[in-house]
Amino acid sequence: MQLVTTKLDEKTRLVQHYEDSFINNVLNIGKELKSVKDEKIYKDKFKTWESYIQENFRFSTDYADKAIQSYEKYGQNPERFGNLFSLSSMKLI
Image (tube, rainbow, N blue to C red):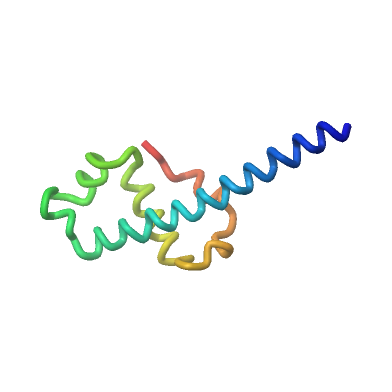
């Protein structure tokens, strides 16, 4: 039983680490995309925000906009990010 608990603890710590990384990555993506969108620097090469996202990333415009919203709401406070299940509606593709 101790071996199972140890393996479970190890897997739990890994998932917690990945969860923290995921939250920070979403906030960092949101921060950078907010700058691109707010300053309209995508217009140098693309006609629309949507075409910029579609041609450069493997996630949807909806995901990009929600990442920006997450950054605007939580910024430098990822511990306040809340329930990750709200991200389940974010389409990566």
